Amino acid sequence: MRCSCVCFAGMRAQLLAVPTLTTCTRHAAMTAFHAWPLFPLLMLLINSTNQLEDNKIPSLCTGHPGIPGSPGPHGSPGQPGRDGRDGRDAAPGQKGEKGERGEPGVSGARGETGDQGDPGEKGERGQQGECAVAPKSAFSAKLSEGRSMPGPVEEAVRFDQVLLNEQGDYDADSGRFTCRVPGAYYFAVHATVYRSSLQFDLVKNGHTAASYFQFYGNWPKPASLSGGTLLHLVPGDKVWVHMALGEYSGLYSSPKTDSTFTGFLVYSDWKNSAVFA
Image 1: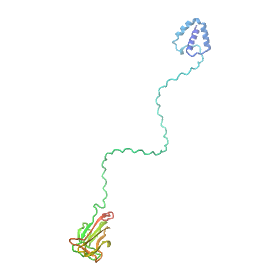
Image 2: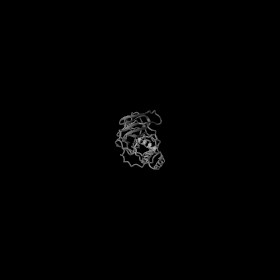
Image 3: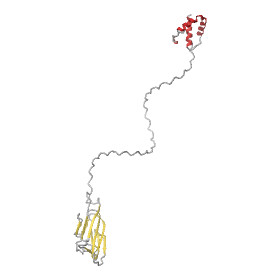
Image 4: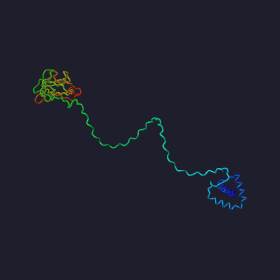
């Protein structure tokens, strides 16, 4: 009776699990067949054991492992895992080769005008210049009235009546101009010709710079002769007027007509002048 109950319990466990054909199992089945009249009682015992877990059913017989079951269906994807930790810094790589220069970009739009900056600091005072005031040199003189004979040939004509000579560069006693400021000068002579033809020279340091002539043909009234030239002078140079020929000395002056000698500085050689050094 005990063996039948145990075998029937084993049969239940085998029915619930994977069936395994063993020698003990066949013996239990034959014993149950001979005990058929006790089947209702056995069923009652089997029902009373429903509450037992499969792995707790006692078994006096040990069978071989069953055949592995078929693989089950794939499960649903799991949730994403957490981010892993940052890896360690690798060793610096070698410097790459310099790439080719790119094409110039398009010029940007002109920016707005910025605010005016603060005034800068006052600079240092510069060196004194060569000349604080522009150099000047000018004169004008005329022949006194009634002097029809200016003097011997190649002697300076003394224009004795000074009209302008602020710098004192003209000497009325000698009739000579002496350069003080180096540069370019313009000299002009206006002569009244009367009673004789006239030829005079403008002289620089004893050398004729320009010569002028006017023929007189016994006219009842005086004629005129004018001439001028531009000369470059250095300090110490002298300029004057003299008669070229004795027979052509018709230089004249009267209350109504004058003979004048004029000169003035056009521009100065600033750096070459000892006066402004």
